[in-house]
Amino acid sequence: MISRLIHASILVSSLAFLAGCGTEQNASEGPKAESSVRIAARDDFFDPKVVSVEADKPVEVTFVNRGSNPHEVEIKGLVPETMIQPGESRSFTVTPKRRTYRMYCEIHEDDGMEGRFVGR
Image 1: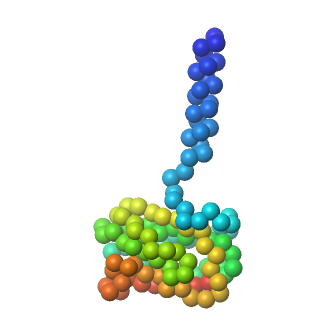
Image 2: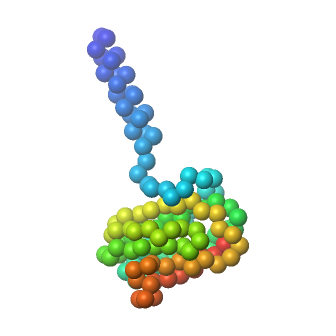
């Protein structure tokens, strides 16, 4: 009987520990995001190319590499250059000002891989 209680206790503790583990990487652990956007980095373009969010409020931005090439994405002034391999994603919590930011891939910028991130 005691053996079963010990096993049950270990199982419950292990499950509680695993529930607290996450898989996304966050660049900042600032204020909790009130909204979120996903941006697909495809081979040589962003989808969507223009992203509009509410200014002065935290937003979680997730880049997902849906292409076959690695991409080094950045939103100038908000998200630092970040390498994303095919199939990977990275999330960032940012608070944009009321302005337009340049969004681009450092590797494929000359191929036209750029867009706009707008705080409205």
